Length: 178
Image (cartoon, rainbow, N blue to C red; front, side, top):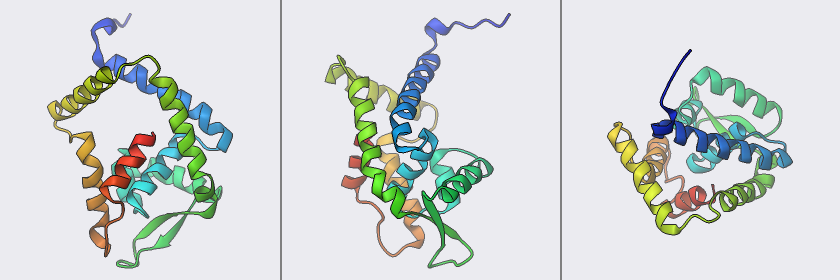
């Protein structure tokens, strides 16, 4: 039998909390006929504004072939379209369709509903401690500070564009909603 000390595993508790959030988001988003993974794609597209498939895969930390299947289904269902890049015609960018734009605000409301339920009876001081702890965990493991990673992802994605994609204030607003 496999044994592990789950009681003392912070990784287990982070995983369990993430799964609860994911399940709650899936239930909320079902009303909009979209899955949590599809929401992650649209959320990331809002952050990066017409990313390439590679940029999106990097941000979502998933393999390109896995993302390709998700994007194909989303394109088929009318959530996004692939368009040629102005700078490099060989590259395709992902653009939100009118369908996704029309329900994006409702999807953000779904996030706010989950966040509200998730944070019931948790003092602000505890939330700040969780944020600081998560930042420290990322730093300890060689990752980036999640609060600054948003802008670096945007800057990397905008390298072949003429202007910034999302302002720092907008990026923070998007993240706060989820």
